[in-house]
Image (tube, rainbow, N blue to C red; front, top):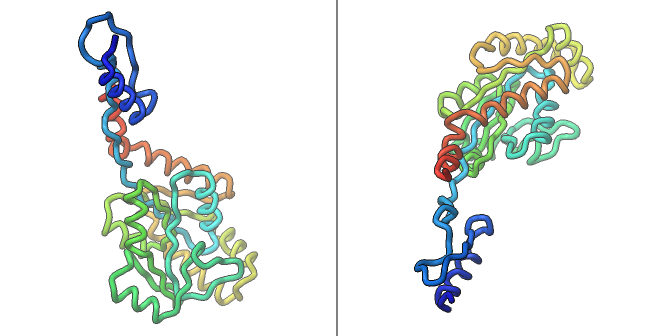
Length: 250
């Protein structure tokens, strides 16, 4: 018969551990030691989540970047969108704290003076900056972060971090990009020509990126971006701790 103090110890152990981690086995009468299989034992200490990675998505205006970013956030668990602060006014349908944090110039200057931006750029007369503390908190929690950055912002983040995967999104052609810009109906012809000139400058820097995706349709573009993110998550260094945990169980 198992002594009462051993029964209490076994009950406490069973309550403290997941059910699968302890296996009780019968022993012949008089055999010493608690009735716990050494092979099952107490599992290895929980492995902290691997830090997340930064995924940069760059594209000229009108290429479909926002549509594809929303697709990725719907389909890939554990992916957070880096909501930047900007001094530009909100466009129709944009939501503060979802698309951007819309702030005035004075508030932006204060954050800049305190060194709170991981990166910031100025484009078309407005400034954009990503909160440094928020970014690091997401990564430390094991989340991947998707950043919508122009080539200058992407370059700044790549220089500051080693955990970056960068993707440049291209339109199928110059003609198609012009058609998409005109189809938005939000800009006059002079502004569209300015956008096309900026697009050419951005496209000239495609060689700075790890991956290139030609966005011919939302479905195709989203599938290719999903594949890039999932492949990056399976890299050896990202899975090293999990592989070591599995190996320790043999």
